[in-house]
Each structure stands twice: as structure tokens, then as C-alpha cells.
Figure 1 (cartoon, rainbow, N blue to C red):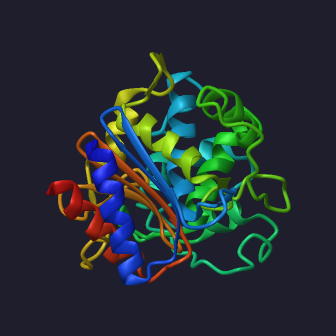
Figure 2 (cartoon, rainbow, N blue to C red):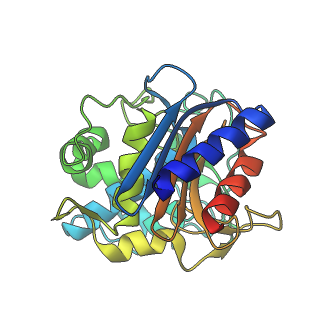
Length: 287
């Protein structure tokens, strides 16, 4: 029995014993793969795990010389009324949630203002401090769209097609832009392909998709995000922990956990059980 199979079986046992409402599981260790399903294999919203895909989009565009992650974003949008302290905010600040701009999530976020990106940028900044907001990722992808056109189509050609993922649907705002911070529907195994690409530092079957430096920055140069374990460090879409591992983490238990040569991908509908499940996974990988 491979290590991937052993880890899979232990995760399945832990999920069943705890009542964690998992939908799908994909374990990749080295080149070994093991999978399990609790529910039909359909595409579902991966929620904030989509922020990692947005980081890859910005990285690919940076590799192509289309954007500079460290240039002020206001240079790329016309007629923007900037809030106090926002003139120095960059794409990297938006994607690491360090713009210092506060705009809380709501179910009507995309329709509360004529343009969410401009609403976000017109609010004041508290400086280069962590302030988590889906509007931050949305604004980053609005800036990116000014250089690459439709970001969904850009990703379809440069990321999803090379990974063999077809006909991806992404929720869109009234302006037709991807909502970016969520709304991306993928199967568990499709999300796991993105995890494999990240683990392999931007390589896919011998082809370079995105630069290794961009991928490394997803779990390096951590910024202080708070005091709660598992939510105290954030980078380019990556959360630090549990332990020495790191993860992409979407609402309701969407997890892509990286630990050494292992990637464990879980899709679920269990918001409050996700942290404990992530700890279970890392503990199993360590033992």
C-alpha cells in the first residue's frame, strides 16, 4: 500500500468519525495518488481557494511582462478617486491583503456600488497592514483585466487548458468581470491539479506555466494576519499552518494543504469543522 493510500484511508476515517461533511478527497504524495468521494463528483464553488488562482493569473501576466505586481494600481485604472493613503497600493498589496483598506464582505457586495473596485480604492488605507477582503482580490483582477482583457478567458488559455481543465465557469459581477475572491466552480480533482502545479513550483508535465518565484511567494514573506492559530500568517493567497504546512482555504471546508511533497485537497460543506480537519491531515502526514 502506498503512502497516499494510507493517508487517504486515515483521513476518511477521521472525517467519518468526526462527522466532517466532506464531499471529495484527493491525496498526492510524490507521484502517488489516492482519492475518495462522499458525494457525487460535480463542480462546486471552491470559495476563497479561488484567490490562489487569481495569484497565478497575476503571476502569469507578470511573467509575460504585462503587469508589474509592485507598481501602484491606480496607474492602471482611469478616473479613480483614491482614498487617503491608497496612492501607493500595488497588486501585491491587494493579493496579500495588505492594502490596509477595509470593505467587509456581504452577499450583495457586487451590487452595492456602481463599481466595487473603485469603491474599494476610494476608501482610506491604514497603511501596509493586513485587512482581509474579497473586494481586494476583485480589485486586483479588475486591474489585471485592464492589461489582459477578460481574466476568465485569459486563465482558460494559459492555466486551465494546459492543466486539462475545460469549460470552467466563474461567477461574474454586473460588469461581467470574474468575482475573483470566490465563485469558481471546480471538481475536487481539478482543484488538486492546481495544487500539484503549486507544489511543483509552476511546472506541469515538463511545461513552465508560471515562475517559481511567484509560487514561492504564496508561502513566504508572511505578513501578520492576527493571533488565531492557523490564521496568524498570510502571504499571496496562502495561509500558514497547521504547523509547518500551509494551505489555500476556502469557506465551508475547501482545503488545499501543502506539506513537503504532499498535497491534500478536500472539498466539503463544513465551515466550522475545517480547521480541525486541516490539523488531522497535517498530523497524519507527519506520522
